[in-house]
Image (cartoon, rainbow, N blue to C red):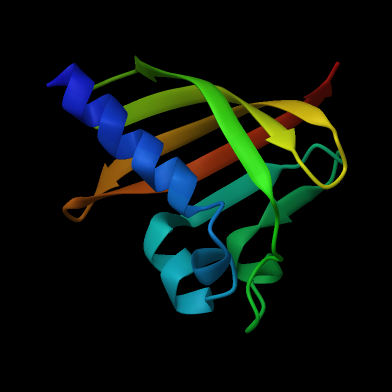
Length: 116
């Protein structure tokens, strides 16, 4: 079970890097829980209802690595991984909290921290 859950959550995290998902308010709303918020690598705090514009959340070219899951309960999982932004050449450590809501996994929290 854990391997398939890990693969599924990795696929969801990777979806959030795809241009067709990031540029679609409807697709983002499917993946992000109603109470979603993010502490960005810029230090800004972003909230779902305040930050998702009709054009989405902006396009990126990023590579994900070192993905791990840390189950907190049967319905809540912490994911951790690294991102390399191919445009800015910055590395960040990322963490997300995914919650099982109404039959699907939705992200309720995300944080990015710049690193070397």
